[in-house]
Amino acid sequence: MLKRIRQLHISLAAKCQLLFGAAVVLIIAAALFVPWQRMEQLTEQLNERLFGGKAASLAVATRAGLPVPVGVALPLGFVDRVAAGDAEARQQLAAIFRTLDAPLVARSSAVGEDSEQATFAGQYLTRLNLRSEPELVDAVLAIWDSARSPSAFAYLERLRLPLEPRMGVVVQELVQADTAGVLFSRNPITGSDELVIEAAWGLGESVVAGLVTPDRFRLGRDGAVVERIAGLKDVAVRIDPEGGTREGEVPDRLAHMLCLDDRQLAALHALTLRCGEVFAGSHDVEWAFAGDRLYLLQRRTLTAIPNPAFAAADRAGTR
Image (cartoon, rainbow, N blue to C red; front, side):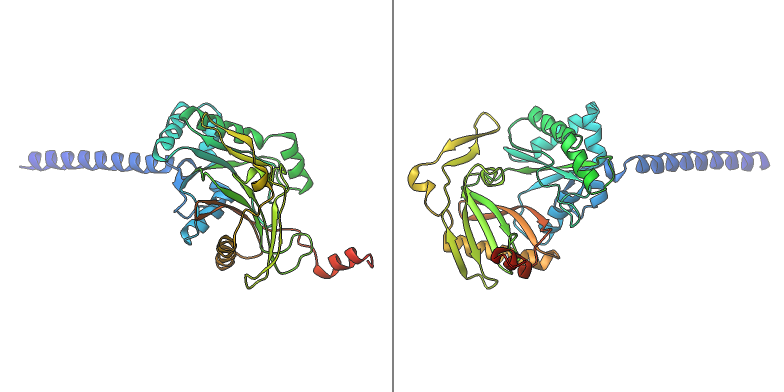
């Protein structure tokens, strides 16, 4: 009888040891599945230190109901693995391509990017019109490389920021824009409390890259249009069916015609008000219209706003 009890005790101890071992394995596996390796939808709450500034900002906007295109955030560790040639990471990236509706856009999302201290505007890459899995992989590699360019390091050094680049990437469905541009919730030249909108035909790259003289609109805080100035929009950047973008000539009639009507200006004014409910500070927004639908592409804090009184004195030559 005692021998039988002892055998049962040994058997029970062995089972407990096996269960304990399995639990340890699960704990270790969970620890290895760290968040900085895991991709997330923009509908999730994203940590800026893990996914970068742009991804975190777009996630906040998405969760608040702002019209952000569908997309996925790639964390810093995952992007590093792709850059290092990790086969599994590249396979996962290819799988992401299949979950979204191409064509896609890949945007940089570095730690500190689009912040109040540093916007990094123009320092890092954006790749448009990605139509295949290899193109998406190449875009992520190019964005990772752009964080290590001489100009990017000079920017970091000038602002006395850490020189070790930490780059995430945002992958989104591309908005095939009819009109696009930028919006400032304060006048970036005078500091006046008014909205300034710059717009052109096609993708917003023609405005951002300075390829055209965009239409310029000034709106009061109540949305009333204060000024409309038609630009010269003789070039439009549009997607190329074979990949990437191309610059196309705009007919003379459209080149001199305002590309936004009152209804679209009202929609942009409403978007600015919504941004004010979600984000602190003044806004620098990239936007696009595809048909009647308005999209928020990027939002960053407007920095270096001049004092209106000083700006007026400078224009008058009294300062």
